[in-house]
Image (cartoon, rainbow, N blue to C red; front, side):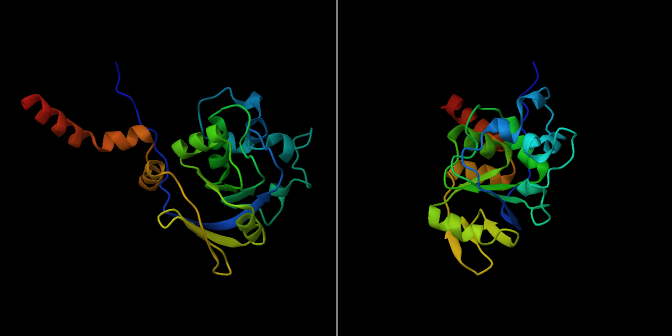
Length: 201
């Protein structure tokens, strides 16, 4: 029986990027990645299907009226979303698709619990802020802001600082670029030493 394999994710210490806005509330996982694209367990390539029903028309052409198709949103690594982002089914493909699309941080006033947990396990940083902070960030759409996971704050172009909190273990995993299994595997030598001491006692 083969040993379990940890997932490799890109570590996050600080993300400096432009902000893209999807202000709709209740954006569910089927809108993030429609069910017809869930036939693969490969993460690479899912980005082209991210928000597919909103991004493309029936002929497969980009829709001009979709916010992320606009010039100021292209290449943005930080997504400012409406309340209750990531609700719906618990598909892990949703954070995979966002990451492959280029999004590293999602900010909202409310993020669905299962989506948040899946995001943290896969290298996508979900941040919950209050309404006032959300409005401040929305004024920076199209501009660069800095998300500092180590310091747990967002720095806006105006030098305004918005604090946020991430659960301590998940934060350490993101900063190290490992999932939960990878974190434990990094401690394998220490765990073995402890087990050996226990057996010898």
